[in-house]
Amino acid sequence: MSKLRVVHYINQFFAGLGGEEKADVKPEIREGKVGPGAALAAALGQDAEIVATVVCGDSYYNENLEVARKTILDMVKQQKADLFIAGPAFNAGRYGVACGDICKAVSQELGIPVVTGMYIENPGVDLYRRDVNIIKTGGSAADMRNAVPVMAKAALKLARGEELKAPEDGVLEKGIRKNMFRDERGSKRAVDMLIAKLSGQPFETEYPMPDFDRVTPNPAVKDISKAKIALVTSGGIVPKGNPDSIEASSATKYGKYDIEGVNDLTSDKYQTAHGGYDPVYANEDPDRVLPVDVLRDLEKEGVIGQLHRYFYSTVGNGTSVANAKGFASEFAKELKADGVDAVILTST
Amino acid sequence: MVHVCTVVPISLTVGANRIVPAVAIPHPLGNPKLSRDEEKVLRRQLVEKALQALQTEVDGQTVFER
Image (tube, rainbow over all chains, first blue to last red; front, side):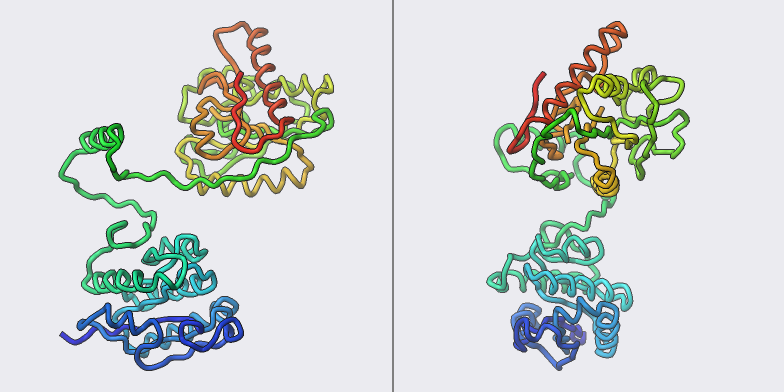
């Protein structure tokens, strides 16, 4: 069997051209291995050969995405590459984005296996992990010795037509669920995990929780009697008939509803769209989920300054964190623009 | 922002900073077993608790117990 033809992508720094002052160099192709390519070639062993190395400045790639992508794609194509490896980029942000972007393009356009390597917090990870095999590396080039053999092994595995598995192949999960057969049924595996957990033994979850971010608490509201308060809910309260067709589970949208002049949410005009709890009580009196009646009283009494004219509502039932985050980042902007001082968010 | 919710551990997991525990999943701010008037008093207490939470400085996740 002839050797696999590998093209390696690195930035100006690892090519020895220079640092920031050379970050705007255009893509160039060099024969054979360059810089970290030596370690990569050694790790790839007899079956593969780095036939060429593409060098590109990090700023150039990021500022000229389309041109850089196309130029490099042509270079890789001309080399008749069987395998494309980029980086590792460690925690270098622009380098990571360049590696992720070019890997995605090579994979899609040329249909050959691609591998790159990044530190988990590299912005390239969030952008490209769904599309590209990203090997988890340390935060700096000090991890080169560890990272390169893992990348080489993964690349060879892909070249043989095998799939990479997280975490044993060192690759970051792409967040894609696949059906598979296991020797033991789910209930047995779950109980085994529970017993391991209770007895302080290590165990590995089959469904890791998403990473939830933390935010610094906002300062307290100084004068609530002058504050404009908005109501937001994940309890699915909507006008009767659910005009925006918010899904009963796994919601992909939220609604914004005008409650000017509404003093009480009544069962003839409002309901819940939520499919994850018994809707009888919320449909009977939607104030049980979204307390418009009480806030109107408090507004009249001058306890609060004002109840915001609109409430925002979605269904928090199997709704993905990414969707929920997307909804909130949209309407939080509107709430701020509307001069809302505080939000009461209710959840069922 | 204050999160009025029934399942406090979820609120803690997702990262809310001001949390007011509510009544029950299908009726967080109500209780169908009470009369309408009593129920509204209960709801008002919860909303007042939420307003109090909004007016309290916190330096991390804080649960305002009833």
